[in-house]
Length: 346
Image (cartoon, rainbow, N blue to C red; front, side, top):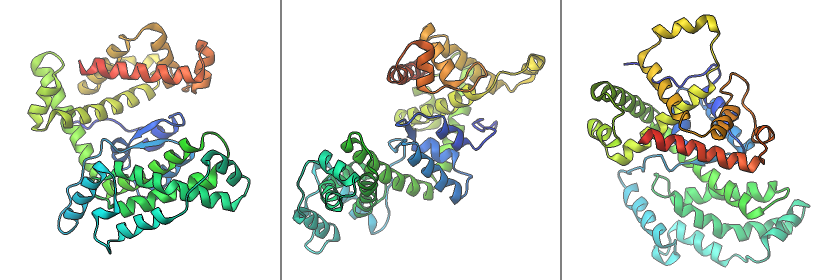
C-alpha cells in the first residue's frame, strides 16, 4: 500500500506552523499526525511555536474519549453538567470541584477589564489580581466546551487558569477580552491534544487517512469517477461524519504538500511518466480544483502558497500585489480554500 505523502524537506510540523498567519486555526488531528514520530522535545517545540505565532488549536476533529473504570461516571456527570452550566449544588458537599466553585463564587470580582488590563500592563499588581479574579468565571465557562475528551473539569480549569495568567501578565495592548479567551482556550486545547497524543490518536488518524486514501483511489478506478462520501464511508464501515473528518484531513495534507512542492526543472519533466499513479491523480485533482477558482482567487492562492516556485508571501505582501488590505487577503484566502474543499466534496 502506497503511503500518503505528507512529508517535507524540513520537519512537517514546522512547515505547517511557520506558513500560517497569526490567528489561524490548526487542526489538532493533523498536527498530531505530523508529530506522531517526533520526540517529546519536538512536541514541546511545536506548541511553543504555536504560542509564539498566536495560532489557535482546533480540537473539534479529535475523537471523544470513552473513559473506562471509575472515571467513566465522573466524566459523564461533568459532560451533563456542562450542557446546562456548572453549578456547585449539583455536586457532593466535599467534592473538590464544588469547593473550587464555591471559592470562586466568594472571590471579589469587579472592575472594567480593559481599564484594569492597561493598569496591569503598567505594573499595577492590584490590577493584575482583580483582572485574574474577573477571569476565573470565564475560565469555568470556556471549560464547558472542552468536556468529553477524557480530561476532568478541574484539570481543564487548571490549564485554563494558566492561560488566563498568560493573558494578564503578557498584555501589552489591544482588546484584552479577545486575548484572554484566546489564551484560555489555547491552554485547554493543548491539554486535550496532549491527552489525545498519549491515547495514540495521531497513529490512529494516520492509519485512518491511509485507509481513506486507499478506498478513495480504488473506487475511483472501479467507478471511473470520484466516489461519494457515502460510498467511501460504506466501504470503510464508518459513519459519514467520520469519513468527512478523514476527507478533510486528507485534503489538507494533499493541498499542503502540493502547494509547497516547487516546480521541477524542465529537464526532469520526463520523470512524470514514471511517477506513482496515485500521486499523479492527487496532483491532477488539485489542479482541477484550482481551475474552478476565478482569476483573482487563483492568483491570490498562488502568491500566498508560492505555487510559482517562489517563496510564499504574507497577507500584507500579497495585498500589495493585488491592491487589497491584509484583512481582505485573509478573508478571500479562507473563502477560496473553502471553495476548493466544497468542489472536491462534490
